[in-house]
Every structure is written in structure tokens, then in C-alpha cells.
Image (cartoon, rainbow, N blue to C red; front, side, top):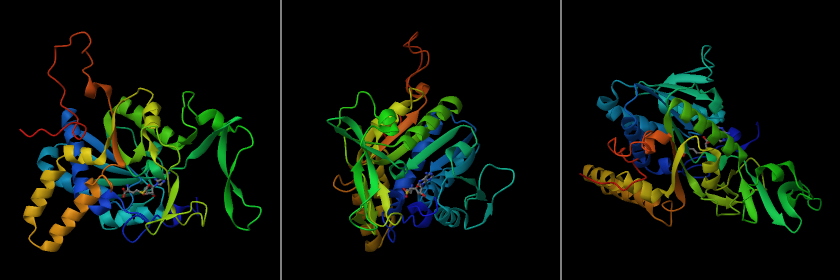
Length: 371
Ligand code: SAH
């Protein structure tokens, strides 16, 4: 809690330890903002919604989304929008406050479950919490970009004697050095976190991600809305992905703990299982497919047409390549969504299959068709 990476350092961005898509290009957040508006319209334009972001980093993604909401004021005019940020890092919440409100925030407001509140530069109320459970219930759109990969994992290995947990120990030979060891017998975690049907012989499980997804699914089932999860990950196939980054370079996870970003690929098959059928899921699909379906090529063309200087044009093309190139972020990042079942299938479809007009497709997960 006091010496952890996100509490002390949390270096998102070019000058930090790792760079993320919203820090690379404004287009990324703009397209995500459009995704929420598109879902809001498809769900019948409810008169209020909360945008709830888990792990907002520097606040850049929220800023880009709020700019889209501002540009589409005419569409959203009758809707009461509020922003709810779930952030544990005191340092990053300060950076977010400056970015989003210009630093005008009220700490520990008495009448709220939030630890801080303020008003965005575009006039939308923003609240900060440490835990998703503190966010008030209500119709909500959730966002988790590069959040789940930051949560702690358990590592397991299949041995001749059965499943064993990979643990961290102090190396008896070298002072101040940590090492990995295998548990001599089964642990509570091996008994509880490995799926009975598991076929891999090395597995990473993130129970905290499972608990949060269960909460998201329950909230969406009860109050409506949708969740968009974007992260690097796989659909239950990868085995050893735990690694560290410091100053944009790979870093030994056991050396100088608390000074490097530790990360493990998100197992989307596990997240899907943890929804327990309370919501429907879409994806994971590759970032380059999602952004293409969201119209990134059109947006790039408009930005290129509107910029006259060569440096800006080069920067636009470079950031497009970072996001879309399969060798860069295009293939390893995935998009995954939780949606109420009725968003994908008419509730009375079984009895009267022809009775209703087709539901609008979910943007990003379906090919973009220009009329
Ligand atoms: N979404 C941002 C930042 C990703 S970094 C981006 O894409 O740029 C991960 C974020 O999650 C940071 O803001 C970090 O402080 C936050 N975080 C890490 N563990 C958390 C936890 N247990 N609860 C809430 N936030 C957490």
C-alpha cells in the first residue's frame, strides 16, 4: 500500500515507464467516446448515465472522451452525464485532477462516498473513488483500459505431484535477492483458482480481476449500461506472461520491487467465465479491427486534411501506425465488451422471432458499413 509502484511512481507516458494508446493519439479516446454514445443511442437514450473509468492513468483518455461528449452536445443535450474515476494512486489522481478540472477539486466531500470531487473543464461533475463498490449504483458505462493487466496474479505449474503455486522467496545464497520457488504442496490458491477443465501446464490467474468483472456484470444486469475492456491479452491460451517495465525497457520482476511496472496479459476467457452469464460478452477482438470498425481511417483522413504542417501530419501517421500495425499495438491489444443480454437478443425473440425490427449492431465489433 505505501511502497507499491502505483502509489509511489505510476509512470504512464513518454517520460515514464510505459506508454499507452490514449497517450499516443487523441483519436483513440475519441473513438471510444463515440462507442459510448453509439451504445447510449442503441439503448434508447436513457436520460442519465455515469461514465465509470477504472485506472484512468493520467486522465488523457477521459479528457478525449469528454471532448467528444462536448462536441456532440446537441445529441447529449437532454442527458445528465457524470464521470466516476476509480483510482488508488494519490499521485495519479492529482495528475488527473489537473488534467480534467484544472486542479479545482474538493478533497473528502462530506456528502459523498468519493474521496475527491470536481467539475470538468466541459462542465461535467467528476468523482474519485478507491474501489468500484464505492461508485453509486445507476445506469453506467464502464471503461477499463490497461487496468486489468496491472492487478496482481497468482502463477501455477503442473508437476508430477499435481498443481503447485509459484511463490517468491528470499535467496539464501545472495543477500537482498528474491527468487521464485515452487510451493512444496498444494496451496489455498491452487485449490481455489484453477479451473477444473484447465489444460495448460503453466497458468496465471488474476482473482482480483475476476471479482471486479463479477461486480461489473452484476451492476450492468441490475442497472443497465455496458463495459468496454481493452488490454493486451489472450483468450485462455498463454502461459507465462508476467513481466516488468522500467523506462520503457523490460525489467526483472524480482529486482528493486516497487520501482517497475509489473504486468501480466489479461486472460479474457477467465473474465468471460466470471460474468457468470449475467451479461452477454463480445470479443476479444484485435485493437486494429476494433478501431477500423470504429472508423479510424476516416478520422485520420479528416485530421490530415485539417493540418497543414508536415510535422503534424507525420505525427498523425506515426501514431496511427503505432495503434494499428500488427507488429506494434494492433494485434496484441484486444477489445472486449459486457452488454445486457437484451442488447444482443430481443427478450421475446424465442416466442415471436419475426416480431421486432433487428437490433442495431454493436459498433466496433461489427464491420463499419457506410451508407
Ligand atoms: N488507463 C490508463 C492508465 C493505465 S495504468 C491508460 O491507458 O493510459 C493503470 C492504472 O490503474 C493507473 O491509473 C493505476 O494507478 C490504476 N490502478 C492500479 N491498480 C489499481 C487498483 N487496484 N484499483 C484502482 N486503480 C488501480
